Image (cartoon, rainbow, N blue to C red):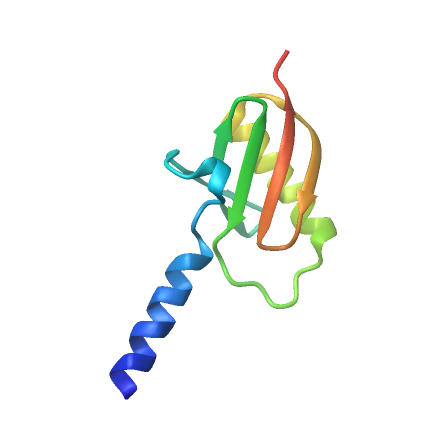
Length: 96
C-alpha cells in the first residue's frame, strides 16, 4: 500500500509541470526570475510559463510579473498580457 502511495505522489508531481495541450511537444526553457522558476514554452505569438518551484501562498500579482519577464527573456518579444494563475500563466506576445 505504501508503494502505491509513493507512486501516486510521484506521478501527481510529474503532472504538475506538464505543458498544456497547445504547448505539448515543445521544448521548455527553464528560467529563474526573482526566486520563481518557470518552464517557458513559446508557440507563435503566445507563450506559456509553468512555475515549477514551491512557494508558500504566492499571490498572482507578483507571479504574473515574473512569468511575463520569463516569457520575454525566452521569446525575445514584448509581453502584452499575462493571464492564468500562480502555477500556469499564458502570455500574449508582441514580436513586431
